[in-house]
Image 1: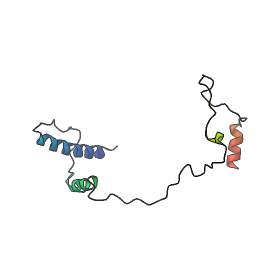
Image 2: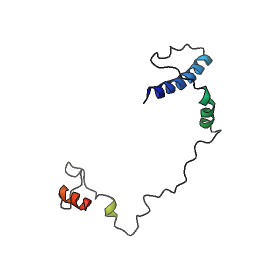
Image 3: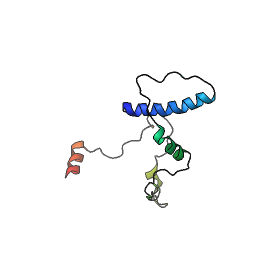
Length: 113
């Protein structure tokens, strides 16, 4: 995070903290010396309108999201979606390899060809 971004975030935080302190007659400690207070007045009213819902935020594209469960058919075997139930023992925690392992070099050659 850049020093400018941190200073800006602290400036916004300090602004609202100062408003709260003035309302309740509290004293605030000094702003950190290594950070410079930024002028947040140009965008403060616009940010408040967006946060309070008076002004809509950025328009996002309307894309259709597809369900993960669309491709699951009722007549398929259920075994492909979960592991068989076993009693909990140190040997049953992880699934067992049922297929013969393939060498990495063979997989790489198949991928690059």
